[in-house]
Amino acid sequence: MLKGHLDAIVLAALEAGPAHGYAIIEAIKNRSTSTFDLPEGTVYPALHRLEQAGLLSSAWTTPPGGRRRRVYSLTKAGSAALAERRKVWGRFSRAVDTLLGGRAWPA
Amino acid sequence: MAGVIDRYVASLRRELDFDPALARRLASEVEDHLRDAAEADPAWPSPDAERRAVERFGVAREIAAQFAVDAVDRQARRTWITLLVTVAVTFVAMRLRAMWLDDGAIQALAPLVDRYAFIGAIAVGAVGWFAFRRSLLAFTICLCGLLASIAAGIVRADLFAHGAPAAVLLAAAGEIALVGLLAFHVIGLSRRLRRTAALRGDDR
Image (cartoon, rainbow over the protein chains, first blue to last red):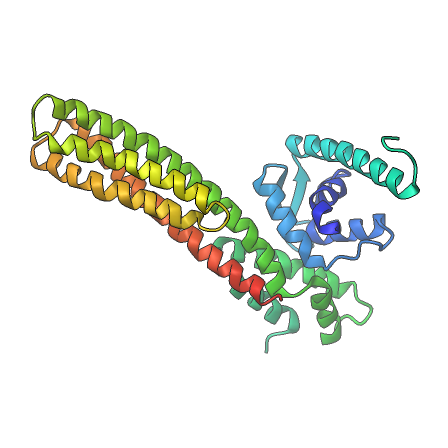
């Protein structure tokens, strides 16, 4: 189930600012209080797919005294896509909440 | 002797052999990731820290399979675009040939072969796409391109033999180049489909 929303989760993890793959996985783990403990490698196909779709951009950077890393950032299209996915998720989760909570639908 | 991370990165590169540029880029990115993860392990530096970092990362073959699915999707899109451009250029080239041939330059048979080959190929392509739209896209595209190029090839040979005008020859050259590009994309699509099937088959 999580896999279907991985792209949106990755976009959301990059909303705070550019980050490399390892930092993105850590952010997802921390923000979900370890509920989403994905195999770390699954984030890379998502990053590549989002970059190909123009929702992310990436560049190699080398911090002083540090290791060279590919850093990803949201593009304008990525920010717009994230806003849209939030809306869709909001509607979906309200509908599921209502159904599982036994209330009349639409709420 | 290569460490755990080095061996893992090498195996990931092998699994991504369907896209050498991606394999190179990802190998270096994943190696950085794994070294960060291993360094954050309390047992660092040790082979156990590297092993745990690799285990958390996931099975190389499963990660490669996810990339392969995306690669098939992109290749299918490129193939579709090339197919549409090829059909459009073939139509223009066919009309140019028909106009020139109508001047009475060559025999009456050539424009008929050209015209009906084009229409026949489009019809076979459309029927094939509809009938096999879920499974045999590559086969349909191949058949469509093959029929069109065989029939139009007969006419093209005639054009070169009789010294057609530059515009007619240019359009024919464009057609040949596009059919070649289409074949290249179809072969690429078929290769990626086979690789994806192999990678995903081993997951089960």
